[in-house]
Image (cartoon, rainbow, N blue to C red):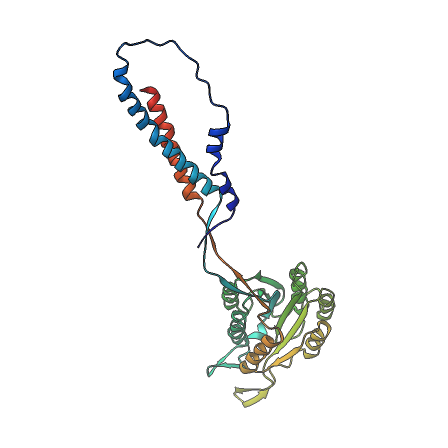
Amino acid sequence: MIHFAWPWLFLALPLPLLCYYFLPKQVVAEQAALKVPFLEDFAHSESKFVSQKQRWPLFLAATAWVLLVVACSRPQWLGEPVEQAMSGRDLMLAVDVSGSMEQKDFALEGEQVNRLVATKQIASEFTQRRVGDRVGLILFGTTAYLQVPLTFDRKTVVTLLNEAFIGITDDNPATSIGDAIGLAVKRLKGSKVESRVLILLTDGANTAGVVTPLQAADLAAENRLKIYTIGLGANEMVIRSLFGSQRVNPSKDLDEKTLIEIAKKTGGRYFRARSAEELENVYELLDELEPVEKDKQYFRPLTELYPWPLGLALVLAGILASSRLNWRRL
């Protein structure tokens, strides 16, 4: 439908008539003229010529004025209402990309994959469900790196998450959990929303960085940042070697105590994911703990239409001006 942003400007439509009737008329000075005895013979043809001459410029001027007033009233085309789910939440994902994430103790669709591959697939599905949230992505290994700042563009977050690889931040296999939390606090500190959440996923312990995880957790608590921690890795794995099969614990380096304390300090929770199925269940539980939709907002896309009547009014004004110059020359 067509909508006028400033409809009160239509009150200017009768302005030319008001000027015509209420402003003083222009006095034409009398000039000497040559009197012709047979002037009466030209009277009829001259009046007809003048009336025809003056009628169409008046019509053009009136049309141009109406179009100008319509353009000034700012006509807009309103599209169909579009629903937006708004949660008012800023959510940051922090994913471990250190060397230990190469461990192939997860299975996806019957195929053994490493921890990072499983994380990327399941975290991508989780991100796509976060309609209305601003989502960001931090990758951390030896150093913590902001891969995607907070954005509503979930597609970009998923794309850059899937492009992550082990060692993208540094070749060193160390892990800087504290720095990842500190970076999340820094990026979320200026946020004006009430709900700020960090989901931190790791399979090891803090072995690098400037800030310890518990110091970073205290800083997060001061800034009302809730942290959910996820410990990755199977409890048992069979390794075949020349000496036969051996059962090992691939998650022996996982510092669950610290991850539990981080979640406790910030009002979050700790989850253990020993398989791809458990990791998927964790993200589904996070959907319940941090529901997506809080309220709904609607907006109608606007398309400005004023250039059309304005352009047409300028064209008519140009025709009117050029015709007046031509008549003066004649």
